[in-house]
Amino acid sequence: MPYHFLHKQCAGFINTPPLWNTEQFGVQQFEFPDIELSYFTPTPIPKNIRLGHQMEYICKQLLNHSKRYEVLLHNLPIYRGKQTLGEIDFILKDTSTEQLIHVELTYKFYIINPDITDPIHNLIGPNKRDAFFAKIQKIKNKQFQLLHSFEGAQALQENNISPTNIVHQACFKGQIFKPYDAAIATLHPINEDCIAGYWLRLDDLKKDAFETFQFYIPSKSEWVIEPHEDVEWIVHLQAIVALTTHMLRKNAPMVWMKKSATDFKKFFVVWW
Image (cartoon, rainbow, N blue to C red; front, side, top):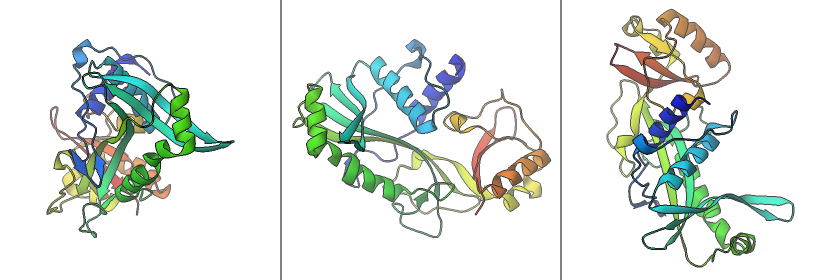
C-alpha cells in the first residue's frame, strides 16, 4: 500500500468522529489522543485484508505514536480448547494514571433508515447486513465479557496483566449517511458530526440534477479518506452503467461526486 495513500487513511481515521461522546448505551467512548500527523510516518500494513483490519493496524500505529497510551496487547485471541471464543482488540495503559483500558475498536459506515425514528435502531449498514444496535449489544455482552471468562482472565495473566484492574471502553468511529433530500429531526444521542453524506437509489442518481457532475466509485479501502482530485473521474452515463452492475450484484457502493475543483460530495447508492 503506497505511503501517501496510507497517510490519507491515517488522516481519515483520525478525522472521523466518535459515534457518541462520553458514555452512552452503557458503553464508555474511548478518548482518542491528539495525533500530529506532520510528525508521524506510517509503516506498511498487510495487503488484501478487509477494511476493519486495516483500521486496526492504523489505530495501533497511531496509539504507539501517542505519548498518552502504551499498547500492552493487540489482537489477542481467546481459546477454549480448539474453539475461538473471541479476540481482545487492545489492552492499553494510560501513562499518566497507570489505568489499564480494554478498548474494542469499531469503524462503521451506517445509513439512516427513515422508516425508524429511534436513532439507536435506525442506523444500518448500506447493504442491510449489519446494524448499530446489534453491534453495541455485541460489544457489551460478548466482547467486554470475554475478559471476565475463565479463558480470558487466564490469557491476560499469561501476558502478565491483572484482569482485575481493567476498565472497558469502545473506540467506535463512524460515518453516517442520511437519506437524500430528507430531513432528519435528531440523531441524539448519536454524534451528528458523524454525518458524512447521504444515500440514494440508482433512479435518484439518473435524474437531470446529476448529469453535469463527475463521479468516482472508490474501493472499500478508500471509503475512509476524504474525496480528492487525483482519481480517474467518469461522466454521469459511465457512472450509471458501472453502478447498474453493482445493483445487480446487490452491492451498495460508495460514490464520490465532483461538483467543482473544490466541491466534492460522497454518498451510497443502495440496491434495495
